[in-house]
Length: 104
Image (tube, rainbow, N blue to C red; front, side):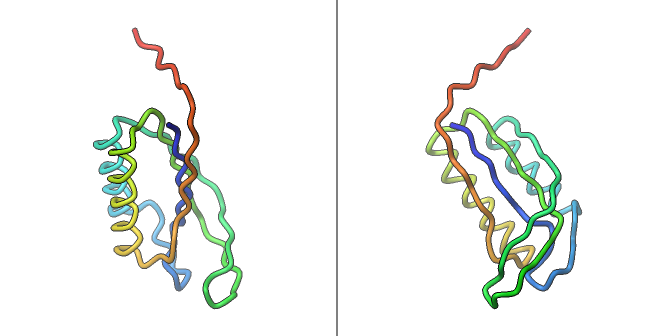
């Protein structure tokens, strides 16, 4: 399974927290659970619950090769991160893929 997690780096009031220590701990938690991930920087745009269009720095975190049990744990890690950083939501896209890890 491949997961793409789209997460903002600002709270619901637009205050950018960026890649602070809490974000790094979030990545550490995900890496510990899944064994590895990739992070890409981007700019995200969305309409908040009040109907205002928000633009913020964001990331896409891609994780390959996890199972259903790990997926539940990933969702819980994400929920905790959202609560601690005062965000409304993140987007998780799940695809079934057949990754091949090349090792030496």
